[in-house]
Image (tube, rainbow, N blue to C red; front, side, top):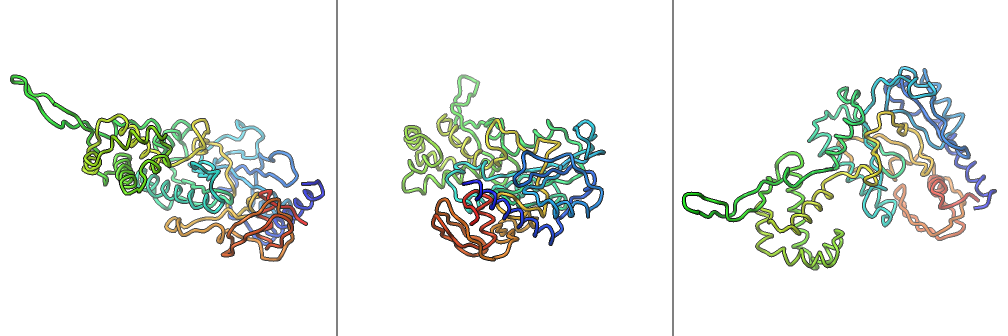
Length: 395
């Protein structure tokens, strides 16, 4: 990308964003005057932060005049949100934030943009419905759900009970949801499979692991359901070895697992008993755990957003600078019905000429686009998306 094309592209994006903010007021968070705000600008260096607003009109005027590429606000409340240091701000509490991004998914690099959005939405529904509502028992009225405008979803827990939680307490919540340090001794109970008598004393002659009932609450029932699902997938597969390799099992381990997984053992698992075979125990527990847990970070060393009591999160109603899609609120009862590539498009279909660096295929606004590299004419909303993702430049 030459400097002239880069500058034209930045100006195009800024003009589009400015028009949007001039015509639309963003959704402001509760106690907006206690929040810190931060911005990243097209062509700018770094982030402008430690900003506070005491009136709603000032925020919308700022957005219309400056057209930032990215707009954030703090999950925390402060006495002095515009103070230049965190200590001076005087922390008053913070929402509990969950940020699910498609980058956190296994094999994320192999998914198309649309596929990644669909997969992360399934994870998001699991987080909200199975963990936050069922296991933790939060009331729906305290959960605000948003599409991030980019590649994921945000959940804001606004129950007053969570505001004062420190980072370590929030870490415990994350550990539960991700199944960290979950041991088989917590899930399974040893069960004697036979008895032998020596004199007057009776001893267990064999042991198996008794699985919890699938309808049990919490992780016990969740793991049991996962185990049964995995067994059915393997048993019904025409090529069990290949199926196991899809799970990430090495070929040699897959062969050993299939050899150990006799029909008799499969039936016993379905009846609620997990054999003492170490290969079977290790595979099924680890696989069920990965399948049932929620991916809240990209890896063991990546600190999840949830643990951060001073986190900046995207402002609802603002536009994501890398996609041109709006940060949009979602109905908690209709998560799976939500299609961000329809519901969050804010720019019109005026035709714009762009130069594509590579072929690109995507479906937006109920229209399938199969674009070749080079000069292409596309709607404004797609032009913003492609330029924001650095897949194209303006002509």
